[in-house]
Length: 274
Image (tube, rainbow, N blue to C red; front, side, top):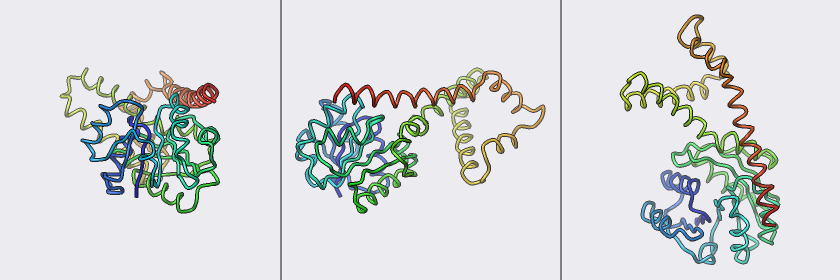
């Protein structure tokens, strides 16, 4: 099985790391290209043992899956470049935020199989939350291949394409929201004079434990929170400050802003480069 990547940014590297770590694809069967950053290509080649090329025909030839992982602003240029090399049986997978299957089809100038996905960078440790949608030209075999590839680096949910912008905001950008909370907890720990490594380990384990409780307990987040929040206790004191600061509303506004930006990226770059 050969998988080719167009784009060598963080999400592409996260996927490559996850696929190799899980022994899903032999590194020698992973090919990658980018626009012109040869240093990045060399780094990836040396780090993962994959092969790199600026020969588009070599990139596409015999590829079971071509994963497009460029920035939305570069989508038009990249699609135009690869279009002459796409065959009717090519399977094209996009991880580009905001870019629609319709636009990709128009740029490729052929009705080939296309999947639009939104994984996140936790793919590098096999913990991505990936949404995926397919166009009508994806065969059952191609669909199974895509689902197996993305399920190997986390969980995968098939959705309707109109839901992709919301999912981009929720789980695509989601890891950054939690990292932001961890940064705040680290700052609080430093103010208390706690040793950095000790605080870091406690914070990480707390997050892992909370996630596991949500995963296996069958209880809602609100139930678990109430169980921890004793009247007059320390947790209640902390939660009350978050309520006063309207933190839930702030997080909802955060996700809404990411959702609107995902929609705008598609509108902006698709109209600009049509």
